[in-house]
Length: 167
Image (cartoon, rainbow, N blue to C red; front, side, top):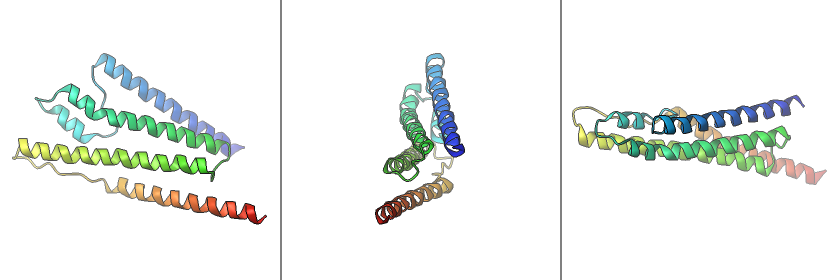
């Protein structure tokens, strides 16, 4: 009972964070005329600082992150909803977890491509400075751990189903 209450609380926290983020993005678009850079987008921040940069292009570069955050929030709240119902190893909860990992990987891949593109673009414009391509090894490690957890959850689900058949 206490565990399901905790997961229900986590779900509502995620939903309120998602609503707050949506409100912040909408407010920034209406008031400032551009999408805020949320989530450590170093390439977008550096690109936005350039004098010849169009706010329209920066906004287009940020749209996939906003969509990815929305997808991530959706799957997280769905996962905690299932956990609140004590569906820890169900195929639906495993599917949610897989989509969370896939969304995180896609967001990281997009960030990496954006950073590489920015570094190459800046090297073409300004040859005096070094623009390193940054690979966040902690994030990559976290993705691999998440994949291992997905595999463990699938295996636990298989064992649980075999135990039910045995009984």
